[in-house]
Image (cartoon, rainbow, N blue to C red; front, top):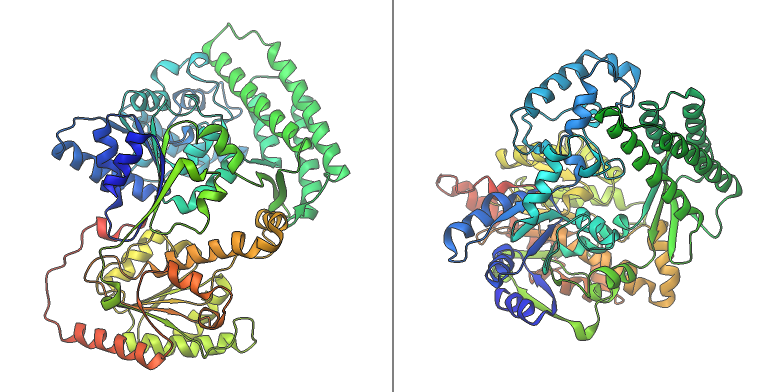
Length: 625
């Protein structure tokens, strides 16, 4: 893989690499990128992987490579404390627009948090929220931070010279390697590339590339809600003394809420609803009135006035632009409403991300896309020309054929059958008993998880934990500490979770994770694909997610166990089963539950008779990624 990455960088040719678990893909792309001498951005899907790169891999290479280099981690602006907002929040004569309501403003807890944040701001070098010993409340952090829709930029802010976010950006601009998350890179591309959000770079590495398409869809899209009008009303109230103007904004937010609420869970087809159009057009007129009032303010008196004016102007301009884009939707975009009736959100995303990437990425830096699971047809959907890239599968160093068994419960009823839930519980119980606990049971819905947990917890002698009980990191650690326990979880645990060692012998998957037929964006893509919809839309997603779920089992060379897929369609569907099977790690396969139970009992009995040995896992091994 390292040789292929080096060649791709030297030839300025894009590369897509499937790198199985245990490959060491981080080092495989870091070493050639660093030794190439070219400025490199690494975009990761998770904070844990970002932390691994910045806290472990890159410092290791600084110590061991003969090629000296510098690196930096850059996050979105809202991750850094804003000194100007903190100053305003702690100044008694400026108490409007703090991002909290009157009850919260009077809250002693929020006041205490602001005091703590003030003390921290005086000592921190980075202002990065992740460095806080205690996570602040949403209200307190909103009071002392700004997002990209509010920040006027360093040149227009009194605290611009000492801004934490700008300091991080300058440090990134002076580094050879810059670590960011996929969402920030998506925002960089949505802004047209260049140096507006991220520094100029010659190489970009997209890690966990199976999430790249969805990230670009979200980053290049739009979100509109009543809350944005309320936020603008607060921001403008901090600088404009016109209660009627702010009341009009609030009413526009209410009107948008009222017109969106009936459409929650639906895709908006064709032209927008007349009432929604009217609410948005009226909202834009009222935003124009705010902008006019802001322009009339003499901002040469104090720095605070200038900063508050510029933030309100930025928020107003951003909201007006998004409303204009929604009113001008074209056939290449999909609009739908998410959330709840009392807090609906209008979302817009491009139907196809390829045009976005063709404009901003493929003619720019050399791109290396890598993941343990590369979806079918990924390069095509991303707009990568066949002549501009290479694809490579480097496999995995793990001995899956010896250490892992893929069991499909072919005798089970179809998951849509009324008897399926009852049979699922029976099948799970037999497998869990054979494994002696040590089970990660993955489900495609909370309903299925809850039902299985409620049924099995009284029937097995081991602890059954569920995703509802505690935060993700704490739950994984509790599962690791109690090696005979069972963990029942849903989609967020299908990927990015490492549970190496004896705590895990069995991973069960309740059904093939095909996407919902009514998911608006995918629904629109199916309509475009027509006869190829299943092959190009549904199958790649189900295959990738199933492979990610199955990949939770073998995390190091001495791990052993069974992946049990309790959906008979994996064994019976001539239409797609081999596409899915071939995307999974090369495990031995069986439809005989007795063979799976025997393998699990062998592992259970072997562990029971094994002598105690010192723990050999590290904190890195138990990271939730």
